[in-house]
Image 1 (cartoon, rainbow, N blue to C red):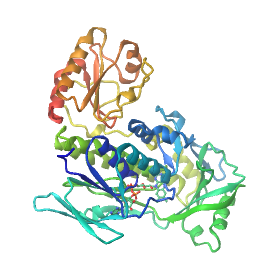
Image 2: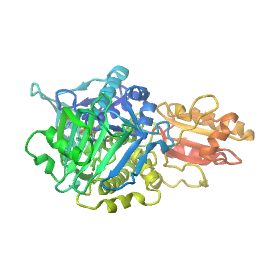
Image 3: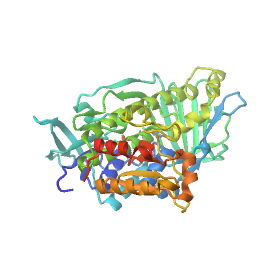
Image 4: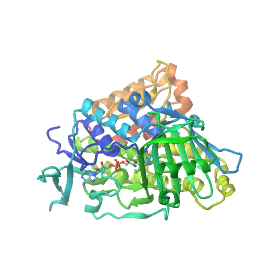
Length: 517
Ligand SMILES: Cc1cc2nc3c(=O)[nH]c(=O)nc-3n(C[C@H](O)[C@H](O)[C@H](O)COP(=O)(O)OP(=O)(O)OC[C@H]3O[C@@H](n4cnc5c(N)ncnc54)[C@H](O)[C@@H]3O)c2cc1C
């Protein structure tokens, strides 16, 4: 740790908090600064999706969320005047978390901060602003950090700077990186967290109500309040009189009987879809909202930010610790930028259904009737089906398999015979080599495992699947007469898969990517 120059994380939103926790878990020193005086208390994002919960599980913190969050079945679509009510039902997910966890972003961040401070002994430096970021002549970084209370400036030469500093990113601007895109013209989003009286919607669902000229979302929040979100072309925002009256008018207009009582938080904002053209400039990375923003449809913003940080943290740590080749860092943008583009496209498509103000209900309903729509959208929104498959490099000499998850896919969970789950084998900081031997291959599996741990003891752990668990694992991961193996990355995605006969190819793959110790 002493030999590693600290990483500077700019911003302590969900993105910065995940990065700081995951770097520290891997003994990489970092500083996390935030220009705000103290944490934000407003709720903002209220949806935690299955893939994010899987990440929290690997971090060892998921129970803190499950204890107090509300498990919602998913989204229920009410189109004015139409009987049919399509749903995105998250109970179909093949995950330990087949639901949307409704949770306030302020609380999500509070638990992440607690994890950082109590479990990793890292403090967030509040009221501390990145005020200058330049490259030295040798392309290393030099920053100025301002104490906003005193105005004092200190300097630092960090190993890397990670811009987790949100939509208006100073880091992105300092590097002159464009943030291309546009606003959803004329639309104003408004949101209220409020107590209500006589809430008459099914509380198991996040309810979407669509009308020609406006959109209303309602859902219970864990603290007993309800989230009410309205989107229109600005009419409600411009209404004279109280916010409560303006919101109540929209609620009444959808034929609902419940009453807004006492708002705790009210906000309004305009929405954009924008994407940074590059995520990395030398030793500077953009992560989270600093790299992409999109429509809030489906509630994926915070989730994709967390998943960016999850993708980057282990790569940075392994490179800084001398365990992986620096080229690993190039895969961050290669993998995450297309996902951001898919999220932008997906939320745009959802936007056309729920917020295409002025377009008829039948036309919008028709968009939900495309074959496979429910399953594919649910799995994408949950983050379960996103894959890096198309960006995995070709492995020389590999005879690819025809079944099971491919390199780049999320490695699915399996219940093992011992009462353990496969996911538990992933709860360490490195790669996991899953060896699935047939009866006659036990010795080869042991040999591969021994060779790998001799060379890569700090970065790979092996999991040899026993005979009792074989069938359950094969059902999901496929099987071969000669046994099969999967190398799972620290972020739970498959790096490599092959028959156990291809041990030589595996060793070459490891030699090309990792650094033996
Ligand atoms: C009203 C609203 C509702 C939303 N609803 C949802 C939802 O339902 N579901 C969902 O998934 N997402 C939702 N989002 C999106 C979600 O809130 C964001 O995607 C998420 O907060 C982005 O996290 P981040 O850490 O990347 O950036 P941020 O949370 O924006 O954090 C950036 C931090 O960087 C700090 N900073 C900025 N500049 C500097 C500097 N120069 N020096 C030091 N610190 C700096 C800021 O003070 C801030 O704390 C919503 C957003 C809004 C505004």
